[in-house]
Amino acid sequence: MKSVPSSKPAPAVQTSDVCRYYPMGGGIIRAVDGISLTIERGEFVALLGQSGSGKSTLLNLLAGLDRPSSGSVLVRGRDLAKMSSEELAAYRRNDVGMVFQAFHLIPSMTITENVELPMRFAEVDRAERGQRVRESLEQVGLGKRLEHRPSELSGGEQQRVSLARALANRPSLLLADEPTGNLDSRTGEEILKLIRDLSLSLGMTVVMVTHERALAERFAQRLVFLADGKLLSQEALA
Ligand code: ADP
Ligand code: MG
Image (cartoon, rainbow, N blue to C red; front, side, top):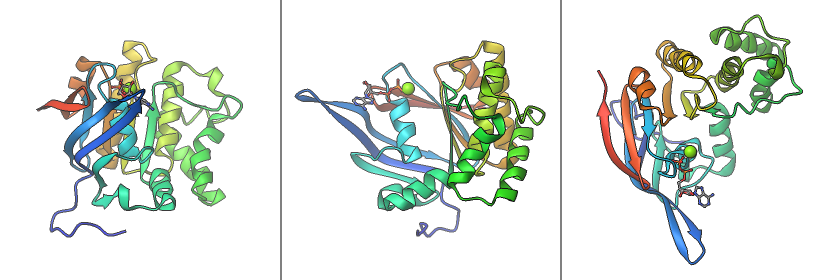
C-alpha cells in the first residue's frame, strides 16, 4: 500500500467527488452525489442532514463496507478502491472502529467476549487480547463489569461496550452512525463526551452521523451538512 508523497502526512480522510448510486426500478437513487470532503487527523466531524440525505451511505463508503460508483475515498493517503478485498478486510479490521445506534452486541456473550471478538478476527494473541479487553473497557469506564452480559447493562453502558469493542483493534478512525439515537439525552451527552475525550487522548479521528445539532455543536470540531446526497455547507466550531 503506497501513501501519497507529501511533506505533510496525508489527511485522515479525503473524498473526491465520491458518488454512490443505487439502481431503483427504472431510475436511479443518488444516495451520495459528488461529495468532496477532507478530514484532518484527529479531527472530530459531525455529519448532519435529514433522513435520507446520504449520511449512512457516506459513512459506509469511508468504512470500506461499500464501494463508490465513482470518485475516490483516500484514508491516510490510501485509495480504498485500489485495495484488494483482503486489503479492504484488513483495513476494516485494523484501521476502522464502528459504533451504531443499535449497539449490535451479542447477547449470549459476556462483555469481555464481545470486546474480544474483533481481536480474535484480527488474530491478536490470547494474552494480548485479555490485556487489551481490560484496557478498552477501562477506557470507557466499565473495567468492573467484565463478566456481565449485555442484558444486565443499561443502554448507555451497552453503548460504552460497543465503543470499547470499536477501540479494541486501536483504530485511527472511529465512525459512529447515530450513536446517541437509542439513548436519553443525558446519557447521549455522556457518550459523546467520552468519544471526544478518547479522540483527544488517542489522537483518533471521529466521523459521527447525528441529527442532533445541539449535541454536535457541543462536541464536534466541524459540522458538515448533507442534503440529497450533496455537501450543502460546513461550519467550523471554535
Ligand atoms: P441517511 O443515513 O442520511 O438517512 P442513507 O444514506 O441511509 O441516508 O440513504 C440515502 C438514500 O439512499 C435514501 O434515499 C435511501 O433510501 C437510499 N438507499 C440507501 N441504501 C440503499 C440501498 N442499499 N438500496 C437502495 N437505496 C438505498
Ligand atoms: Mg442513516
